[in-house]
Image (cartoon, rainbow over all chains, first blue to last red; front, side, top):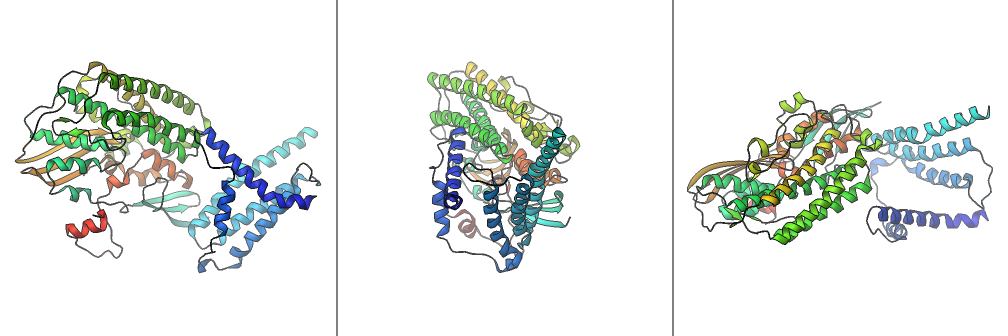
Length: 147
Length: 383
């Protein structure tokens, strides 16, 4: 059951992205792209050849995208979804989310561009401020309540 | 943290126009910013040389894509100083009307861009929707939405009818209501205030030292406006307030511009109420034997100054000081100490127009190269 759903995951994600873009456009007084536009974009991008700089030739730049994908799939397995059973562990969820963003940042750090490094630093700051500090603060508050 | 120097631009540095800002970073904060212009140079002053005074009018209008009318208005204000005749009063009123309509158009466009820079996409779309109201008015009066070609030496090309006046008043009412609503919304919005307050602060002293003009100076508390200080066209006959704010940050500059939109609507109402009847143009040809003239107008971004040396109806030398040319140097000062994420906000709040501003071109190998006019045109104008 879980694995059959896994096949549908990319399509569901793309559908939600398309719906989001359409809805946002309607809010903003625009018509917006078709709902399946992200899928067509993906299809177009898939036709393209890979291209990157030799300066980025190092393991830290090559491996993190794969780990990124793996952690994304793992994150899905631990998400509280309807019909998908899982053992809920909030800390584990946070841990995987950090890993997930961490690999993203690692790729930028490993790239040979100063803009990449500055962008990675900024991403970390945004990450900590917007996601983890509030999350841990809420966790702490909940513990206080139970006690 | 490490120190880095990264180029911000030249592709799409927060605005669509190309320019490069080299920023030295200390962690997340900017230690030093250096502007490197030269990507949008078109040699406008050179193009104007050798042109007849009538055909210069068309070239001048194409200096800027947003404040097109301000430049052609400035040109006629300058050139008419060399002629003894006086411009028909109705033409003066129509010129003032078009300038103020353009100010509203330009400020709504800018407001959209600033909101886009801070990530407020919805209000960006709304502002650009309201801008269409003004473009419709232009289309109805002059036939062109962006380039109007409305000016002539000693007059304007198009007259306005009573039905036009009704149409303009209706549109002005609409835009006033909308902008007041947005202003209320933005003033109450915490995120907007947090992104704009104390960002890119320009002190009053700095504003004086750098000789700033327009809304940038008025945001820093300097009470300066060519419309009031040196009235041209029909500004003598209207009453209006010059908007100033004392804080000098991006929020103050935004408020100045928002309130100017409402003030422009007020001016337009007065103009349409008191517009005199009569002809709108005088028959030419007009001859200027030998003259050196200058004129200045208040463009949406600030004081615009044109100087022309004319001999036998041919422009021998043109010097154009666009508003951005006057205040772009403050950008480096305003960026010092700001966060890297605030660069788009500071650049956006200054509302620079790089294509109008650029006067110099730096070759990569920095050797001196001479161009004749033909080579220059082929390389940079494409003609």
